[in-house]
Image (cartoon, rainbow, N blue to C red; front, top):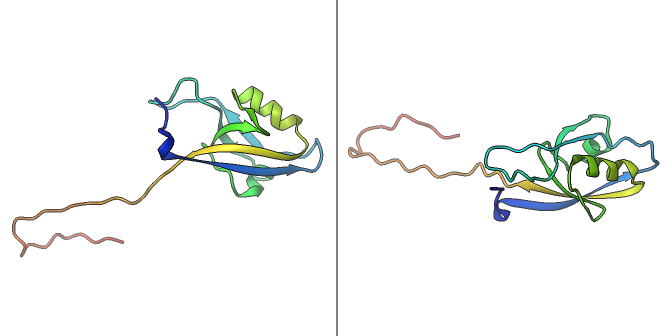
Length: 121
């Protein structure tokens, strides 16, 4: 079972390598969590501080890499090679779970004269 599409957002991130030796600085890994599709796409495992990926400010740990320059990111080895071999603009299509910190709490009390003793920030 994978993350339902309505609970994710896809976006394109453009990173520009000025030459073949430019360090993108992103470690990909194939790993799944309980409930994930066992054939999941590669995820960003680490962003190196000195790399172009971190400098973009648009990528996060656990982002799922869908494609590199329009080519499916089948696994971490294929995706890493596509990124390493690319020059100029690299267009990464990523999928990110939508995380919502909004929630509703309903408290019922029989005696309205009693205080709840909580505060919300």
